Amino acid sequence: MAEQQAPMKTYRGNCHCAAFVYEITLPEIKQVMECNCSICYKKAALWVFPKPGDFKFIQGTPPQITKYNFGKNKFTHEFCPTCGVSVMVVGHLTPPKPGEDKQPENGFNARTLQHGQIDVWKIDIKTFNGEALPPAYDPPKYTGPEPTADVEGGQLYTGSCHCGAVTTALKSKSIDKDTQGLVECNCSSCARYGAMWTYPAHAQVAVEGAENITEYFFNKKIASKKFCKICGIPVISEALQLSDDKVAQLDENTKKWYANARTIKAFNLRTVNGLNVKELAPAHFDGYNFIQPGYVEP
Image (cartoon, rainbow, N blue to C red; front, side):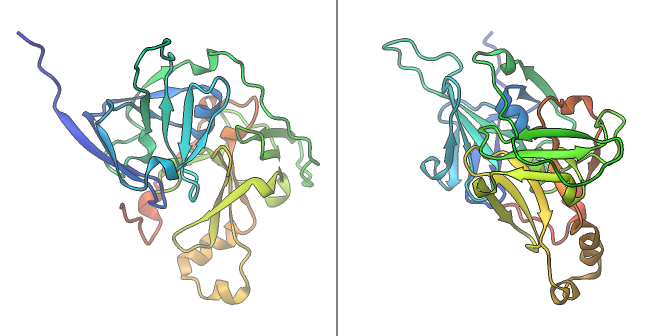
């Protein structure tokens, strides 16, 4: 008897700004692949691989998306140039042999699937040791001045986006599994970025390469997510410095949030060299339901 095929299901996903909306068809997603290579780790990607022909773009087209290659150029990493969300990878883990007609693999970032289709905090994860593939990644070095904050018992952490166009320094007390205040958020943007946030004061952070950062504003447009415009890695998020008149126009809940947010930066710990976020214990924050007005899935 022929083996019965699993029923197929169509999933819909998008970058945050909805410049790119897609549908993929594959058996029910019960497991995703997590690669620990230098770029997949920084963008926290969780991959699913539909067969060729089992995906389509509803809005936006692949030629419009920003593409980033590195190393041996086996895969092209593709992200939205407006919001910085990593959408997909295209390429061959095993390159085609001379004369071989081999279609590329198309991996879609399961973090971009619309809310409620899968739960990335609970789904089964299959790991892939991409870190072991040559050539070894040489993390870009931060060479700018140290942050100006005086942190008792603190140490200096440095990091970068993947390509090195943006480098960062964070002065903080030691960050380990017992560190409090680390957060993974499932709001419409953070869920797609996969960032692990810590919240230092402005003076605890220094950034080099600001000219290579794209800022993305959404919702009430009083805070921005900042990502490298070359490789798409989200680096920090911070509130705008609003005038007193602008603050007075905010609703009461937003005023309370802003009173704290204006004094800090959200710093993505996935960008820090030598720090493994898998060894940390962040709190999970249900930003998707907390933040109002809610996000409208396109």
